[in-house]
Length: 433
Ligand SMILES: Cc1ncc(COP(=O)(O)O)c(C=O)c1O
Ligand SMILES: [Zn+2]
Image (cartoon, rainbow, N blue to C red; front, side):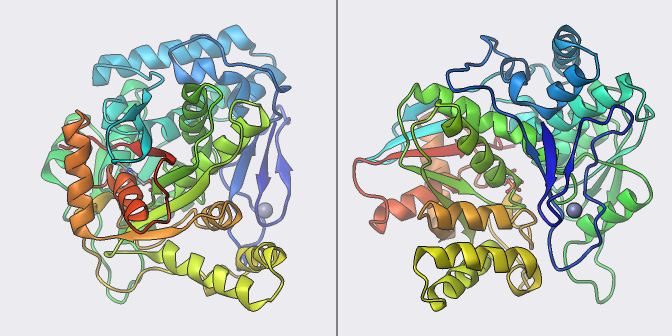
């Protein structure tokens, strides 16, 4: 099991003395240096352990588990750590990690919508999954003596991710700095304060483009902080925990296929993790085939939609048919600046959690959408309001952000892109606060 760099193709792993890196150290160029967790998959027919705790159930697919086994810590040690960390999370947040429901809910007439409900999960969203995956790597590294314990963690976020990070940091008695914008929700700030994290409010410096919180976060990393974040570009290991969502989805479908996955996109780690995880589920025979992947942003900020349009235009302009998609994607991977840059207009939407002005994990989403025949959807505020209301009607208290994938599915059904009778998967996350 290894991490593979998207820019230089180098793999990392299996070195007992060196921890897996968070980012590749190849020279910065016009490419993203995302390290993708790439497990050696068990033979088809393998099934997860019968365990409610996702990281125990699916541990055979985790690079942290592989590292623990490769360097002599053992399976029992790993499971023990998962249970101990989970118990600590329960003591802070009231409940621990559980494989969450993914059941057909009456959300769109004429379609069968399988909704993965993350609103009741640790800290009210799926974000804690990304971070628990990183935490397991830190535990392995510290147990092997290849990373000093007690390093400061850092995250930039305005809401769900910050709360998840704060819960996990408190549970494991680790110090955490959270970089938040001046207009962060008061309820979020007071919960962060109660959890005892260091809060840095980030104002835009004169002439600065891009997200000031993310910039301060990167400065903290340069000063030695551990990226305890939900952006694969800053820490590829974050994509690993997110994959548990996809594996669980596939398992809940019990051998049936889904036709469409419609996912809301902010920084892009959620969607990227789902694509990686679903591909692995297909390879393992847990899912018959990949669904068409559709990505959802709002009129407030849609940098990924712009990037996908550009990749598609290049593919079509090549006159190569399907082969043109691969070529355009390769071009995009090596020329990020031509495809992805911060959204210029001031962004506003009810779905505040997906207003990221840059889709950090953009490339895998372009690939996932274009290779599966999916679409990029920009939803209106009215559709967001409707989607949230529909989720609440079936008893899921998702926020506008957390219901944005459903809003995208509604739009695609209305536009006839998703036909009547289709089977659709969405993630409802981010409980309303
Ligand atoms: C509830 C919820 N859903 C989806 C997302 C989007 O995830 P990502 O930023 O990984 O694209 C977020 C991110 O903030 C969120 O809070
Ligand atoms: Zn590299």
